[in-house]
Length: 170
Image 1 (cartoon, rainbow, N blue to C red):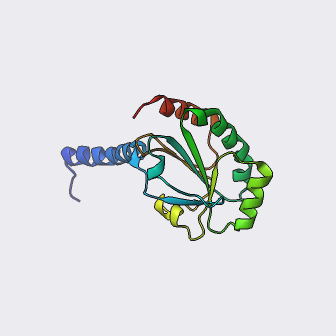
Image 2 (cartoon, helix red, strand yellow):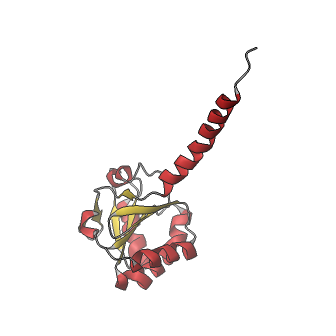
Image 3 (cartoon, rainbow, N blue to C red):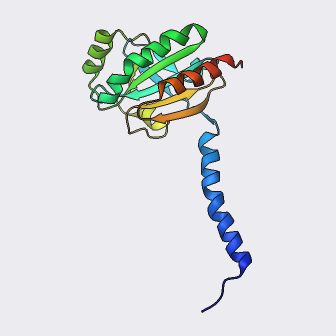
């Protein structure tokens, strides 16, 4: 049996420790938002490029997702609270969500933000192949994704993040 030199063990240990640190760094480093275009249920076409200069919250959801429908009133409250300072919210219905269900939900709940349909899943693919709902992205004024949240957000934490990003100037 061959003995392992201490130097080799140290290098191996450093490599093992460096991988999680690198993954953590890459997960918090802002990445450019994709060049996506959303088709709203109102017939409007909205692109991420057209929203540059604003803080944008993009929420992928479905009417069949209980967590999604439960969080919608809180998303609406956040939108109302911050829209005057430059927050734009786009709720993107997943490709499997029937458009008439989405339209009925939006009307019944009087959602105060843009709601888009993603009938072929193009927007979901652009945002990293989103498959789980809800998935929420926060995009800063420079057009960078600064936060990705899978599942229900901690709304107090999300509010603080939005406050901080809205306070920043381009």
